[in-house]
Image 1: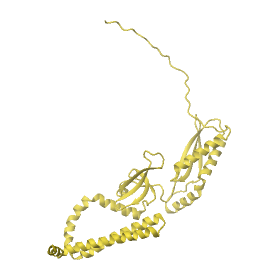
Image 2: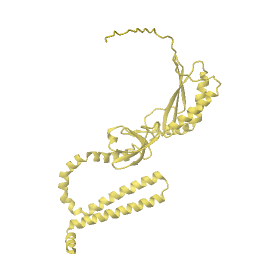
Image 3: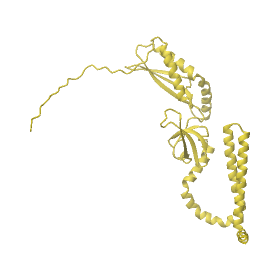
Image 4: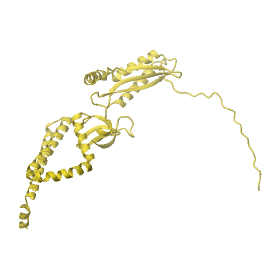
Length: 304
């Protein structure tokens, strides 16, 4: 048995393969120890995640360099074989290669980063991990209304950044414009209605205005884009049925549904306190007449 092992390890390729395996194990242990040390050293979650990714990627690079150094003498003879097989491998792994290229594009092109809320490949959610092949999302929506999590974790191939548009809800401008409409009955004090809506919006979303202005100014300096109104805006359209008010405002993309709930509750309280000067309108249906209905009864013949 010993003679067989000695004969087996006498083969240079076997020794180099064993040395490569040992090098990979050493690098893996070092990466694990460094990540464990960083987990205790760095309290910030985002910085700790990025540091872990950098260390892991550096471990891959070091392992590949060590393997290349071990097999450096054989690389010259394998060049022709690699060249012949390269075309077939590239065709068979085109989706994998596209995903790696997508990962490079995401990393360098700032499509999105961990923590952003995006819509990619028809899936909307928060980015919780960006891997070399896939991006992992905590999904929002679907059977759950609004922008709340539904509990599903979705992994999307990075190649989708080349196939479909990437919608980012929180990149350079971490706010969204939201709006709602409310119907006020004819005969109400429309001046008071506008005043109530303005007061409610200022109370609920006024805190976002200052931050939104700063973010929008940075957007104007970075992109060719026009100025936009970030303060709450109230518009009115008079129709034959009612006065339709539209309230438009900016809101944190993570609190859109909860903010609308608070606005609605406060608005109802304000309308109730107006003493009937402002009242909500509703659709009504009035039946003015019924067409005459003629019924003719016939008795069938007895065939028995």
